[in-house]
Amino acid sequence: MSTKLAGQPLPLLDTASCCRPSLAGTPVDPRRAERLAAVFRALGDPVRLRLVSLIASHPGGEVCVCELVGAFDLTQPTISHHLRVLRQAGLVDCERRGTWAYYRTVPDTIAALGTLFEAG
Amino acid sequence: MSTKLAGQPLPLLDTASCCRPSLAGTPVDPRRAERLAAVFRALGDPVRLRLVSLIASHPGGEVCVCELVGAFDLTQPTISHHLRVLRQAGLVDCERRGTWAYYRTVPDTIAALGTLFEAG
DNA sequence: GACATGTATCGACGGCTGTCAATATTGGAA
DNA sequence: TTCCAATATTGACAGCCGTCGATACATGTC
Image 1 (cartoon, helix red, strand yellow):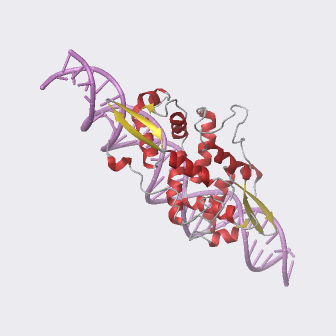
Image 2: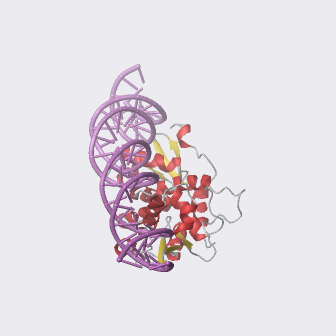
Image 3: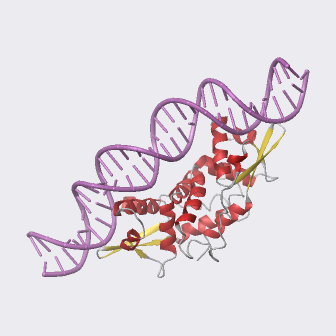
């Protein structure tokens, strides 16, 4: 798996600039809006949203790709594509063990999104 | 303003089906995933994300469209288009007073998104 | 009524995106 | 090494989306 594609480009929260990262606090600046919108765009597909939910709710906190492929009526390359989008958004992470790849969510990213919607 | 376009199609939380609406609880079913993904798709554009943030963080809780248009380097029809997308997603609501239209966020929708990212 | 202003809609265009079939890559087994 | 299974990548295509100019609608003013 290419490390170039798996990385998280920037920290999501940007805690240096503001003490209340909620949407209702200070208006998000264009730079951070771009970064956040990329994460929401990743969640803006029903298949990817279900993928994140399947991974997040799985006992043990990680899921094998083969299991994810089986949960949808889509081809394996399509699921692989969606997983890459989620990886690039920093929502999930993966680890290869032997032939299999296991995906888990990135808690920091999920938590950062949660604080976004807290009351201002 | 057409009421057909301003409405919220379905409740976001669907509390009847599940007691823990977080992503990490029960995996979201395809029907709800479609509805949630539509909301995230609405947030998946930097301009719309900034619009929501501008509205949510504005003192008084509402903003005139003319002020929103002035905050971007985009044409008025484009801002109007983005506001409609946010309206259709149930993220914002609007009220006309005289010549002006005032937008505010929909607290229930914002709160529902917040609970989505709470620990499972 | 006529006019001006704020807002929404329409139609078009370029770019992005979800999906697939085909193929490449990786890692274990024989 | 050779083969196979699991996963990732590539290339292509249709459909969606953000943006604009032009225009329509709504409301207040004269």
